[in-house]
Image (cartoon, rainbow, N blue to C red; front, side, top):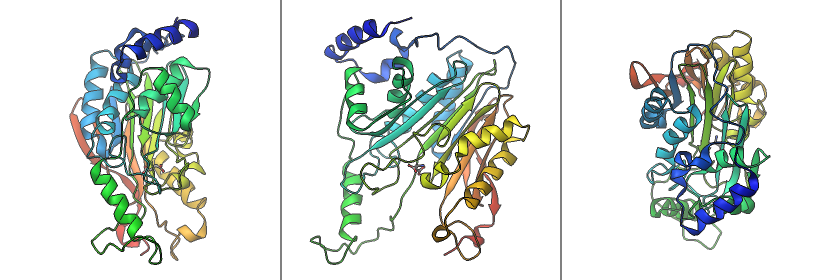
Length: 354
Ligand code: ASP
């Protein structure tokens, strides 16, 4: 076990040496205090990785790592790092769409089934891989969630490298959004096509190993143009992601405000604990979300005006994605390879309120 004093001394030495965080999971420091790699269950399961659709590349990376014997949380974090570091994915990490002030603020959380531990960061600026910072909170502190400038300071102390996360493309989108915000403000109106009012996007990834160990992670730049300081569901353990090594894992993407009130990921795992299959569990969660939704966000037909997707994976390797409306998909990788599958849904697309 690495003591905190040892860790901090080593971490500052690493920081001074320009330590790059992407190597964190490969470094001896990543061997979590308490033995993160211990506690494997004796159950034989079907190894599987499930994620939001933007994780199609990541589920393959994570699956291959799991098959090679890697810890499931390290494997899925490597999977989501692909989107976090991809400047073209405007919903996660580098290149994420900024808040109302033009600042990229990131949220992430993760959970490790075998050790029953969790970590999270909210409103993190300047660090492209909040999933790794969330895991560092889990591994090296007695806490679960760090937020804002102190989360950034914590990451820097550990050797994460700060960088400007606002790409030119995202900056231009933000400028166009701002120019159309208010006809009486000091900015010139932009006449081009920008249909981005509330733009969401995130990556959630869940895994189960052959030994039946599960893990989950969610990382996001959150809702575009959000009020600075807004925290979505992604860093909220039990909302944006959750896992229980005796049951399985679940997570979400989409309108976080709707999910937080239903504790969606936790609820999905609880339904599965009661013996409900993953698909049915997620549809029940979606129904609960709608039941908890305020009228202004529902159409006259009672259908939600927002998008929210859930993903679940049971300890024995069954999986599903589900959402309110027909047409969404999710990514999965198992012995049949990486692919997109259709989400289960409650309503036809034509039932979506205008
Ligand atoms: N769930 C994320 C949030 O509310 C956004 C998204 O998934 O699109 O911050």
